[in-house]
Image (cartoon, rainbow, N blue to C red; front, side, top):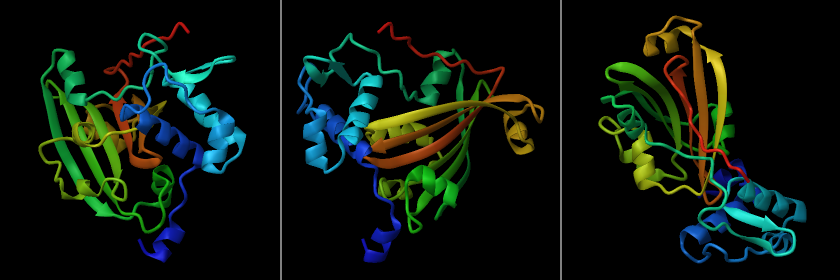
Length: 243
């Protein structure tokens, strides 16, 4: 990477680097259920950050069910049967099939380039970052089920540039080929704009559910996506944790 590119690319927040490092060690088997996790003071020293930053990383891992924090015994990798990890990334084709419907997919647009500032912020990327922008429509028994708009960070996943996504959707391809260590969902209700209403075969201003998703791999954003569903057609199910 050139010096100029390095200057324009924002640094990954330290708390995400801490989370990514711990998650990578768990996924590699270096840390197993019940194993202790370094404490806040040790992590702060290792990553050259404040104890508050280390605390945020461990707190978020605890909230996601990855680790368990005990006042006297410290932080340990969560054991099976403990807290549920509420974040799930379903394959939309399997989601539709589980409803007893036939799945259909269409790639609407595929474009390479440098994303707008608002999207760069979501990708935590600099002005020189290139992204693959995809728009797709998913159907259930021929009825529009989900409109997907996605940006894949080519700094993190350069191999995505060679995939045309004509036959396989980015949701399925990413889950099959790109491991992720961290993620978030943001849910909101909205009214369909004219273009979205036409794609989803609903009336303009009809209620829609929008899900925004970002995933990271060891502190670097993989993808940012927006999924829009007709409000009358989609139900969200998530496990509840009794603590």
